[in-house]
Image (cartoon, each protein chain N blue to C red):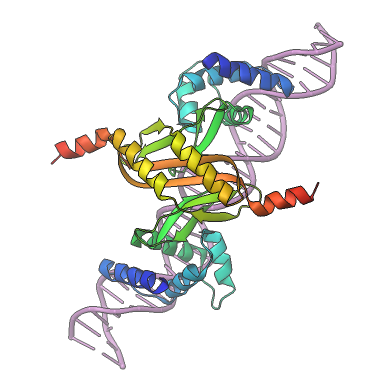
Length: 149
Length: 149
DNA sequence: CCTCATTCTGAAAATGAATTTCACTATACG
DNA sequence: CGTATAGTGAAATTCATTTTCAGAATGAGG
């Protein structure tokens, strides 16, 4: 899957007449290896450990490129930072966001997608994509809360 | 419904030991009369027509208060501005967002809510609230696009 | 009605993330 | 190689949000 995404990005770079650079390689590698749902800053800080360092702006621009190429999606979970996750076309999932610890987990459900299509059709609406997030307390935090009593 | 929301907000103000002011009254009235999904700036600009004028900061703070009191919800639809819509507890709906004209319409669907609960349960997750947005082209924009051919 | 402690208001300043600019550097095509 | 083109990164800018602070309004207790 990682190789597929690399290939997609390389093809995108080539088709656009863009160049392959050390920074883009390093950022792509780190991005694909990372946990999902990274913000620009998180990825930037992670990369600063590396050597030599890569600028914030380059991380920012490269993540935008990833999104344009289709290997990443942009997200806003309400904490003020834009987050990126790696995906491939066709793949889709939604999120469970813990309001206590901020953990983000994923799920997907075909039945919901089917109903969404029905709703859209009945409104004369042509869906391009959707976002669904369930906010609440994750199992780990709930357990912790019980212990604390 | 408008009266109910006013009452809720007044009770909230009283319970918190806050004061009732002309500005809050004006903002509440305008907010409840307005179309939903207003940004701070939109509401501020709308109010500037009035006389005398109310400051941006006051609109900002008052909308936050509305959200705390439970008569409003905060939203991010990806255009960089925070939007507020008026709701009452228990009421819930989701959104269809047109990527061409920005129009936002609402829908609600019990089947989806039921599935969401199941998913949450199977993840040991305690849902507090959820957000679901379908992005695409609305009927009006689709019609326009066809005409333009 | 006054008094006055408390809260509000709103202009201005600060913050914080995203985005642009620009001088310099790296890439890659010929 | 040489050079046109794209990329990089520090600094500056933008833009919405949030905080600060001095003066104004509110309302509870005289």
